[in-house]
Each structure stands twice: as structure tokens, then as C-alpha cells.
Image (cartoon, rainbow, N blue to C red):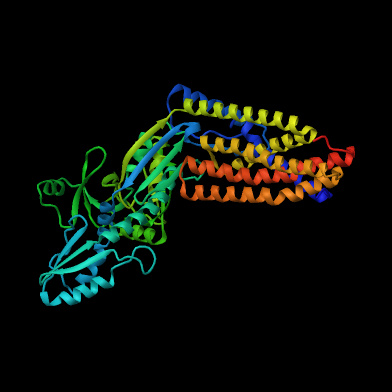
Length: 558
């Protein structure tokens, strides 16, 4: 138990060194670490001055690139930011899903033909279909049931409830069970789409967690403007490319109630009307990537995106066959751009230009690439936490940690003498390892997380107290210092492991069932359990073994 060969000593030193390097960036500013600031588009003088200062520090930084630069992510309650509680409307999700199935319904029934109208009129989440001939009822029901998809994996709930009403009427609706399954499926999809919209680069600490079956909690630490987030999430993100007509005669006929069949009036942000074909040439599912770019004419912010192979082929073929016509890019029912086709556009690279700011172009690119939301999000609760409150929480938590550490150190030294000081040294190493693990894993530290660190200080000392009391008992029984230490660690091992394993299981359950700050507490508690066992049972024992080897005491002052 007291034998530490060279490889074991090297491994302990490597773990402590690596933990210290991971925790080290938390002692410096981002500019000192060479991290360039993110342009938030803020125009107030204080934000501009902070941006310029960090940029100057980053350019002058000498921090080696091989060393870590990641810091502990501060949660909403420590950094300030925006808290939003949103809700999905299951009825709207069901209606939108049924609308996407209309093309398949129309195709399968028109192939006979079986229906009297080309496009059935959907009424919310129900779709009435009138047949040409009552004798075709069985054939129509069989065709519809064949294309009725399931929700999620094969064998799941069917989306459409298909019922015959009378001789020639079929009513398609979405059952209550299917609505609940669609809402749960939409919640998973929305969380991923929201994450891609708010954090397209995957580098921010935005927290997006489900609550129940229809609600989603969004926490954006460091975000000062909830309106920007709400604007990003309020957009459905449905983008289509449609042929357009802006001739005065066509617009006038549509405004008088006589539009061309299959066409509808849509306006742009300036109120200019366009008559667009309802059947899109390319949709949002055909977009492979989107990013913020620049207009080659005036270098103003724009949005560049690239189409998939099939989308690029349809886009190129349409532009080749419709030279001189208008081609509208429609986002959420508004024409973003309507350029005239002068020549075929192959390759699938498209650009949207307009009066965008840099932030607006970045947000729009994130919305387009993230994809269309299954339904609209309703905002139930909104809170903005100021950074001053978070700074007060950090100071209070730091002060509590230091006071606890000092009191524990005084107790350990008074109660156990020199060996107690070894425990204090390993306790400091434990705190550094916790900070290093939080930084390396990219975990978010919340106010309850600080409480978890304080709790870990007590737990780590508790393991040392158990060991030291066993050593004291062994020495009273007449054992030598070496054998007393060996017996103390051997007999305390099972007790320490039992206590920490049960606590780790509790932390795992908190993480799986909790959300937000509760998860932050569970993460720091779980990390602290691992590091406290390592420092109490390995580092303290190493310190003690080195002292016994060098001092060779006849009796332990414990």
C-alpha cells in the first residue's frame, strides 16, 4: 500500500499537472489567452470598447497555442442572460404534419382518378375528401391506408385516422394518441433545430432542455437581448423557391379575386406584391449548407447557401427553361428576393442580398440551415438575469468556498497534525482537478454547482478522517507507523468506496431526472466524487508514504 514505483509517481504527477493546466485558463482573461471576441452586433459605446480591448489583447497575446484555453462555462445564474419557457401546440403540429401529407394523398387518389377536386381544402387537422363515385370508396380507403405513415420507428402510431362518412365522403384526421406522439416527436426535433439556430458553431453554452411532453426550457447565458432570441425562434424557417410574376395585370387580377389557378399573392418586406406559383421548385429540405457572406457588388452582408445534388439539378433546369422570368425566394410567407433569370444557374450556389446587418445575416443563415420547425413555439415565461446578480453570486460562492476550506484546514491540522496538512494539500489538488475537469469537459457551472464543490470539500475531508481514525486505532493497538498506515488505508477502503458509490448513483439520478441548475449540481458532485477519492486515497497516501520513507518516525503524532 505504501509502495510507489516510478511509473506510479509519474502517473500521479501527470494527472495533477494536466488538471492544473486545464484549470489555469480560468485565472486569465480571454484576450490574454488569445481568444478573439465574437461580434455580437452591439452598438453601445461600452460593448464596442470591450470588444476592441479584447481584440487588442488577443492580437498581443503570447499564450502558447499548445496549452488549453477553455474556461469553465458559467451558467445563467452566474453570468446573467435570458431564460425562456416555450410550449409546442400539439394541434398545430398535427395540422402541419397532415398538410405535408396532402401531396401524397392527392397523387394516390388522382391516379385513378377518385376525387372531384385537385386540392382538398384542409380544415385544421381534418381533411374531408369527396369521391367522384361512391363505388370507389373501398379502393380509395385501401390506397389511403397504404400510404398512412407511422410516427417514429416502424410499428409506431399511425398518423392519419381514415373514416368513411356516407357514400362518397372520407374524413381524414389525426387521432388524440397520434397528436401526443407527434408532439413528443416534434419536441425532439425542435430541440435540435433550436440548438442549430442559437448555436450553429456549437461553441456557446446555450442550454436547451425538455420539460414534460410539450415544453422546452431555453437558457442563454451572456445574452442580453431576449427579443433577438424570440425573433429567431418565432420564424418557422420554411424556405421555398417559386416561379413569380410581377406584371401589373396579373397582380391586379389577383387582387380583384381572380388569380391564376395554382398561384397566390405574396408580399416582400417593403409591401411590394408578387404572384408566385404555389408549387415550389426547391424547398428548405434541398438546402445543404447556409452561412453569412457578402454581396460582391457593395460588400454588404448577405446569406450564401448551397443546394443538394437533386435540388441543384432542379434549380439549374428551371433557370434554363425560364429565362427572363422572375424567381422568388420565399421565407415564412414573405418574398426575401425576386431576381430575374438572365442565364441558367448551375452548381447550386445561391445568394440572398438585402439590407441586412451582420447579425441579421448570421441569424438568417442559422435559421435556413437549421431547417423548418414542426410548429410554432409559444412563449410562456421570460426572464432576464443581469450580470451584476451573477457576479454577486460568484463572489458569495467563492467566499463560502474559501471560508470552508480554511476552517477545514485548521481542523485537520489541529486534529491530525502533520498528516492532517497532507490532507489539506490533497484537498487543494482536488479543487484544481474539479475546475480542470469542468473546463476540459465544457460543463456549465451554476450556483448549485458551486454548492456541489463546497459539498465535495467536506466529502473529501470525510474520506481522510475515516483513514486517519483507522490509523490512530491501529497505532493504539501497538502497530508501527508503516503497518498502521497500511492497515488504516486497507480497512477504510471499503467504507469510502461504499459511501462514494452510493452518492455517485444519487448524482447520476439527479442528472437524468433534473434540469438546468439541478443538472449543474449533479455534474459538479459527480466530478467531485471521482477527484476526492483519487486525492484522498492516492495523493494523500503518496504524501504520507514519502514522509515515512524520509523521516522514518518511530511514532505518528496523530
